[in-house]
Length: 238
Image (tube, rainbow, N blue to C red):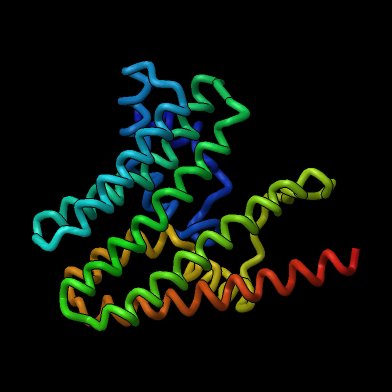
């Protein structure tokens, strides 16, 4: 199985640059390389997902260390974490091995890795002398909002099967100003974008990284409150 075949035939073709999570478009370029290694080693998709979790733990641990080379290496593993997140799906489609626990393991991965990243990012500010209390408050709010978003996504997936039109598309994408605003806002709230972009910003400028961290903390809090309000309204209307 070569790179071109994996890229063209075994990835989600409906994820263009203006659909889904923006960072997916970047990760899709590199994920076939991980997929080729996994296929050569005859790894099942769930093992690839387990590797993803391990890469994430290593990335968070390295980034939490004060040395610059550790943060650079930690950033590499954080990126490798998300690239592998796409690779497990490619391996599943190629080998046609779909486990009912595959989605569960993938969610466990995010529930484990995301809080570790937030802790590593916040601890980096404490190392630089930022007020510990405010950093800890921001970390708590960020972790709470992120885990709450994951729970909401779980509920939405549970109820998708009750919607006969869920997941159906006419294959076209109508791009309007409203759609672009919603696309940008959604991507600002998606943690993978933050996890991959933030470490680079932090190493370029810790001060900008700090405000970036606070901004996404507030955006995630606003997003989850809005999600819960609309979800509650939907349930009451039913």
